[in-house]
Image (cartoon, rainbow, N blue to C red; front, side, top):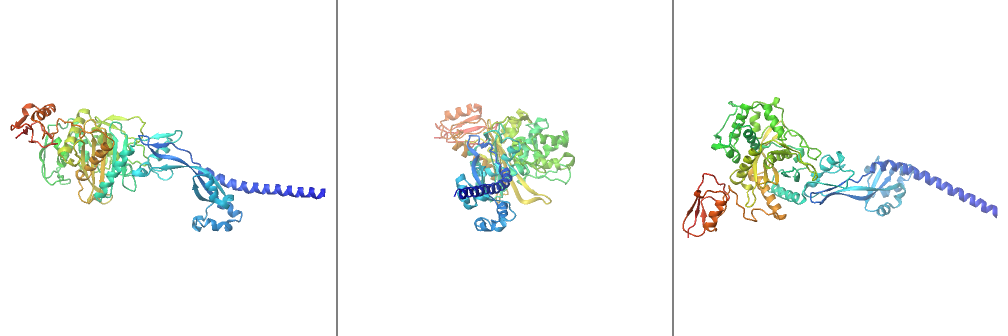
Length: 565
């Protein structure tokens, strides 16, 4: 009896040790296979991305991934037995030549374990960190995704090592403004049956980008280029003023046509088909004269070389990446001056022959909102601002005033709304195709400007791609920016001159309904000379006025107030 017990214990012990040995070999083989996979699945926790107000744009979420070792299952000759389970989620093609098979992603370890069922013995469950993205309002194209896109803010930050070793990064983007820009731009693109649209709004003083939308399959704002068209004219006039090539009192003649080279190789006409007659520099910007800007370019070339002009364009930021934190940004196109033809400078004067990215264009135009300083754009809220002086402050003040007049009386009238003093320049750039040239009837409609006119806070660019009806920038793009700033100021509760009575010294106010004494004093406080104010009639209140409300007041004009009973 004792012998049987000893034999039983020996046999049982042997079998137990043998099973442990088999399990060890089985699991060790499985474990070695999964070590390879584990190294691939390592997912570090990167910094959260927040907007400028602390709203979350990208965050980390812990998940569990269940993976099946098909190779191990086949080695154990159990693949055919479990094939019917695998086929519930995968077909033969999906499993072909696969060593590991991702069974699913789960919120908890227990969910993963239960879902695997009998497949657990061929599987492993890994804790992973997934990035969760706000994809509303075009954020997916702007921010990008680690491991999924080769462009965007997040891939840039990862490449520079900025996502590691910190809990969060605050971007300059304003979520509320981004929403408004997206909605208004989309509305305009749909209304105009356009092919796409782009908008960028930056903080004028710092260059921090507050909103950026690109309604394309890819982000053209940083990865594509357009010709700037007439939006380049104020920059060129500013250069000419700074170098004393022209002065504010100069008069130029705009006729039916102009041949700047003196030959028939380049003909310039006005977009409306007729000349403006004798006009000054202000009117050149306000009415966007092609002929006069070509004549100004002629004056520039009398004093300076193509190389000089090229370097000035480089100083404005054209032809090179801005350095904004966006992976995939391109240089744009600015041909070297030794490749220029005789007509190239005149093409440039019309905003042709160069390719600027939208971020380059809005950054260059921002000099007028920033006392002549170029500011490097940035997506980071907590960053130092890099500035350089490219235009003198006195010249900047002159051009800024003229750009305000453009919205009141010029090509950008549709950017005007009472209470919103916007300054800016329209542009209409004919689209070009490589190897084909300019495409007839195909245009970019542009408006680049700043708000408010006095002490600008924001500089912005609107581009509408190939609208089907109206195509001039003043008709299509300018009203979009007006609508954006109107909504933003209303929704943020920002006080404008619409919500409080503010009078500007060069804009005629609506004085109807005011007493004669009140109206007279308002004009005096605006800097109007008393001898230039005439009261007609013997009534107590103003019933009409000689200059319509919101019109620009010329120094030479007499203001008549009618006060009939």
